[in-house]
Image (cartoon, rainbow, N blue to C red; front, side, top):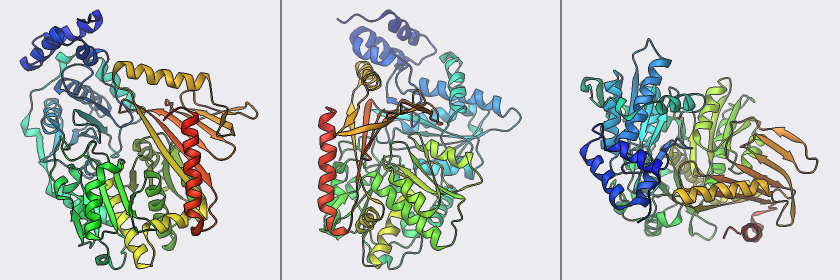
Length: 574
């Protein structure tokens, strides 16, 4: 049998004391006795906050999601709230998704907050993540929690923390909260609920959220009954909100994928409940062909990510990537603001360092600013907070996230679904389509083509392998890509950008992050980034060519696809 590391055994043995329930103690003892590999994975580190909060496999241990790791988070957060707001009655909102144990873990979190004399507004049933962001502001809460692991596999769950503005925690709060958590012992968690402080919420927040979503994304597109919409929640929470929002905005021809409409943490009809994966939308695409749909909408389990499929020039349904959806939505919003005379140079759109550079082109074309932050919508939410003198129009990131207006401070598939339908409807009324709108934008701004490659590296060995890959990229930087010289390297870990033609360096004025980006003479951009929430390293590719007219679209796309494939081969990532 594999020998257990002494430090790991010591950490595991600490979970055999009476501070832990009998079920947990039995499971840990079983791991010690029979499964040293799983014991090591469960205790070799402590779960940490990443790009989208804390996510992990459920089970006993410090590197797992369970009542004790989340209880410790909540106790630390409670202590921090009392320090920051010493003379205020504290309030928090809590939501949860369809995952296994989400409801019971949400109750545990509510119990701990209430035991610390903090008033809790707990959703009575599962709700989308953006509705929690909305509820934090609507109820004037000091923070909010969502129990979700987004699109991760069924064995995962997670814990997202939102602050008073409805956005996820960012510096300095995140470090300060983590420090409060780290000094705690598990024995200090207060689990005994004060039930009089826990209030269930539902209808009032639902109705307010529906109205706000419609107010931000309904642009009164004509002939809504001419558009057929297929929608799938992929067994997640959006079934509770997207159909009501679409109907409130006047859409009647909504076809729901029945097999995927029931919330289910096993996600039985898909390999991955991720609308980024075409396979996840197979059922929706089949229904689209039966119903002659114009647009397909699919969301991830907590309804922050949005997948959009539309008909291409040949009438075939295709899934757009996140960059494509983002630029069409952003351009539409900018056009609406321009038409209404609302652009005066004091507006901005938001994007991220690994998303398409086309967002900057759009900002320039409409005389607004494009603010670019690190990966994760918490940084776009922070932009809104940091620049109150500027109006936020909308923004997104390549990973199928978009936000319309600032009433929600996280990516919001509910409101974005309505916006996508508005674009499709208005385009159809004008004799065009969502897809043709995208091509028109390529003619105007250049044909950008993006691709994402995610390499899964699980467990302790995988984490070490990912770390080494980033070290190699830094210590042995690429000098040419597909025959084009690398002219600039941005290292967000050292906060420096190097001009490779002059060797001059300039500071990068965003928080440090483990991201490396190469730029070449011909406009190619390649970013490497370990995921903050999954055991993956991600490579983001963006290439560009001019597009003279629609007739050249297919040929230019082939050239761009071939270029990306050459780069992938060159970097040995296939």
